Image 1 (cartoon, rainbow, N blue to C red):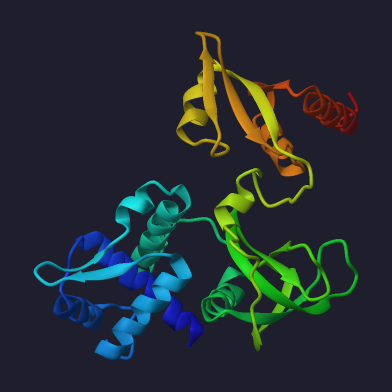
Image 2 (cartoon, helix red, strand yellow):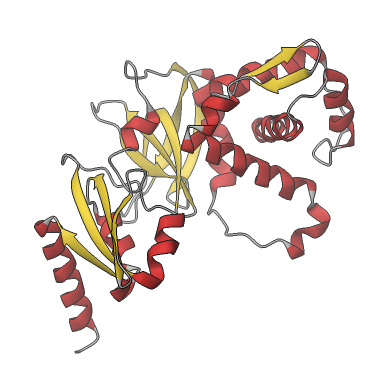
Length: 300
């Protein structure tokens, strides 16, 4: 049931977003025709408004009604200036398109997200209901799984894997857990979720490239990119702070302000000789050590 409701929220957000303004009657008509409505169930007035409230709590997307034009996304201007929520709208729209186009699944290829369909709806609903979850989790470095109560703060998608950031009972600091094969089970709990005062998910991850947490403070990072790859990296920034500060016919220099964690180094290494770290010096040394070890691994 939780997964069905999650798909309904996705469908409703995408339907209103695509139409701009749409009447309650038109929403009901489209829902009756939707392939997601496999039972032919009517979208009742009370259910519709419950969905609106859940969408606001879960996604921060506010659906309001203009008596002359119909329902619309009231904070769409805010969403356009919010990269994360704008990405969310686009992702939800694509997800809905795939669900509605089941007869074309063999012609639409996408990257699989491991196991997320098992746990994502459960955690989303727990966050919406402000409740904890009991998690059974086994990291790749552990021989046995452990079970604990988790206060889920937020979700983050990174490199085709969903992660949940949260604090487990008995610990002061939050940690991050992958919603893949490491997550063995998630059970909703009645215990209330305790969130830190004024917690903001986007602000929390602003200083990181990915999902590896680090106590270090962010610092300026500069990389040199060969000219053939400048437009590519400029069109899909590695981080929200990315700035192209210099460009010549031979190369471009990008600047960032972040914590240069392990996953950021891995991203830079994935570009091979097209990218060179200029500063800070300690990151440059770490890259040298990684490259030297790779050189050694190949017997060179």
